[in-house]
Picture 1 (cartoon, rainbow, N blue to C red):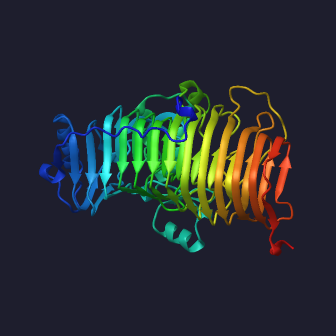
Picture 2: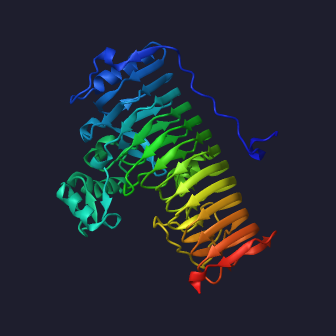
Picture 3: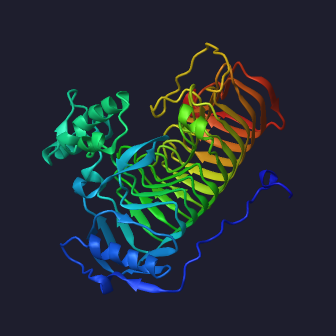
Length: 485
């Protein structure tokens, strides 16, 4: 093929070029135990960088540390049996100008942090733990009453409505303080220091880096998102595990934001928010930056709990192009394949192909296109009012779903397009689902359905509203289960 955009498989990203030198943290004063070893581990990283790069080895043991600054041409290798615990002491985490949820701003330094690097890797079979429980708030509705009472008894504070638990009073008041500073137009770092307990970092933040490899390790218990490569090129993520409590606020697994040429394969996710998510900035800031997420391959991954298995949006204002997803398994995930946006985002999502996806026990929709996303899981909010099409209107088009199987879901396929900008050029081929409801299609154009098999509890397996140019190529089976009467 002459064009990457026309291909089913993109070239494998380039791997980091790491010199064959070895540095062990124990040679620089690190020893397991109760003491913080930040200085020794950072000294090892710095010495390796000064020598021209190499592999920094973390041997088996429990290693308590503050945030670590990564360097170019370095592989941070945690051996099996190594547990790297990032200390939950906010004073250890300086504020850096970074990105979060699609916007630039001040955040606490990520435990694993790097910017403008070339050739950086984190490998091995060790575990990196972000001590997220010291940072994250918890919503009451996500817990049983016994769990909620146990959480309250552990310390922390409640909001005025007694519906949100915060690990500290500083974190509780930090949100309002932070937003006031933003409204005032404050840009100096010092203005945001009182909100440090609120400004939760990702466990891993890599910004504008080239040739990145994450392989073999387990990343868990992040303060906010777990893994966040932003503006990176040539990214390889393989054979890793990402774990967060199912109730963890903003506990995403992997957020590839404005990345180009990325491969994610043979990974497992069990997290508290979206598992594998593609983003490209939010609203006007994202459109102005114009940094799409593009040429992305995701294959042979398993997702357990998560708000979405593979997700595009909702911060997609810079566009998402040329994505291939195949041979993935979602078990007990809230939503399987998830596309989300809202008026005001703008941006174009196009040339997306997802195939050979298997799902079981999906809580809400097996496949969801939701252009009225408001942060409420399972919400189907929509309206009939048409607005003028502007640069703020998100567009989703040229999307193919093929060989999709789901055993158990509330809804097989949901399309909530915008009246002024329907979802365009969606092809669904060889789609089989057992669900309470079948397909709910609102505002879609040039929709092709080929070999659809639905077994539903509702008497009407397919519901369409304001859809145009719908083509049923080959008829499958549209069945109603006996329980529906």
